[in-house]
Image 1 (cartoon, rainbow, N blue to C red):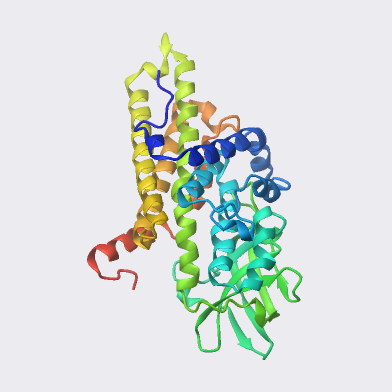
Image 2: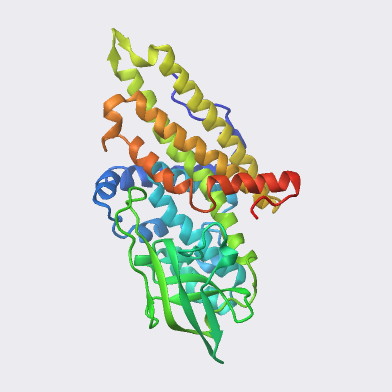
Length: 388
C-alpha cells in the first residue's frame, strides 16, 4: 500500500523552508479547520476569527516583505500555503487568497508608502479584512465594460456603482475597488467600511463556498479621499495583475482539495469490504485511484514549474491561465468521481467529497471561467482574439 501523494518526489525540488511552511499550515488545518468545517459549511456561516487565525500563521500576504507585516516568502511557499488551506476547504483558501492577492498585492504594488504602512500590517495580521471589487452585475468576463464610475471633486472623488460576487464583502473593513474616471480610464482605490453611502449586502442561499461570506458592494455617492486612490496604475492592467496572482494561488490550492478527496477515497477503498475483499482490490476502483494520482501528479509538476517561473519573474498570464484551468478541472473531476468510491457514504458531511465538489463549482467559474481561460490559451497560440 502506498499512501504517498508525492509520486514523483517533487519534495526533492523544495527547500527546507518550503516544507516547514507547508507543515505548519497543514497542522493548522488539521487542528482548526477539518474538525469544524462541515458544521460551518452546513450552517452556511463563516468560521469566527478566521482571518486573525490565518494572520497568526503567516497565511495572509506571505510574499509581502516583512517591513509591511508579511512573511517575505517566495511564490512556491505561497502556493503550498494555498494548497494546504484548500485541503481544509475552498472557502478558507478563498478568504486567504482574496486578502493576499487581491487586496494586499495591489496595495503593495500600486499604493503610496503612506497607504502601504496604513493598511498592509493590519491586513497581514488579520486585524483588518479586505475584499476586491471588480466583477459587476452586468460585467463578469468582460471587466472593461464596467459601469462603476467616479468624478473628481478636488480633494476627493464621488463614487457610484455596484460590484457582485465579492468574497468577504459583508465582513470586510476595506475594499479595493476598480472604477472608471471621467475619461473612462480604470483606476483603483481603497473604500473604507464607514464611508457614507457604502454598503455590502450578503448574497444568501449559496450551495457553494458556504463557510465564507459572499456579497455585493454598493456605492451611492460615496466620498472617497484622493489619498485613497492608487497613484501608480491606470487601466485594466491593475486588476488583471491582481487576478494573475490569485489565479496562480488557485492552481496550487485546488491540488489540496483533490488530495483530500483522493486520500479519503483510498483509505475507504481499503477498509470497505464487498464480495469478500476490500473494494480497492477491484479493477474499476483501482482505475479510478490510479487516474486520480496521475492527474494530481501532473498538476503538481505544472505548479512547481509555474512557481519557479513566477519566482524568476517570467510566468506569463497565459501560463497561469493554463494551470488554473487544468488544475481546477482536475480537482472537480476527482471530487465527483471519488465520491462514487464511497457509494452512499460519499454524500454525507462526515466525508469531504460533496463539500469539495460544491466548492469547486465556484472555483471553476471565478477568477476567469473555465471557457475564458481556454480562449486565453487559444489567443496566445494563434494571436487571434476569440473573445469578440
